[in-house]
Length: 195
Image 1: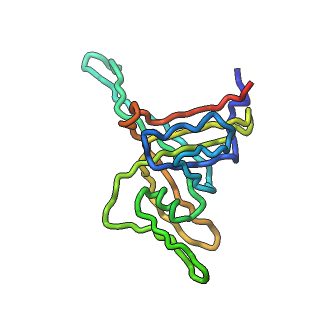
Image 2: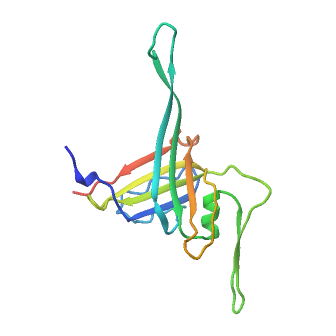
């Protein structure tokens, strides 16, 4: 039977990232918008929604004696979280590229400070954890959470400064098995209301 409480449309969505750690965990079954704690960082405003992709590829096994495949074997899986960061900060640019080193010179009385994001001659393979926290606004008002435990950034940044549009930083995270925590890749959790 159809249940309108499972229809998802919401303006209430948050995106968090954390440096990859085998100990990163799903937040407690708390209300939507409760900070997850730990190393998770709220990236701020997003633009265009938050997306997820779960895709599998298969290979047909064929033989001369059959016009139909005799078996199908899985050959790949693609798990991704996507979003556009609407706040242009050095930290968000670092998270959107998974590259660079941040350095801060604090402001003092009468002297400006600055934050640098330095890219050097190396390209590192870095991993992070991505977490979406979306409020089920049409249903129970509870949270829908999606975590990609060990993700690598696959987005390419091409930003334009203009008078008519804001700069957004696209983020595309691809999930890989976590070799330090039972091979976990992604978790999708729907919070149920208390009785």
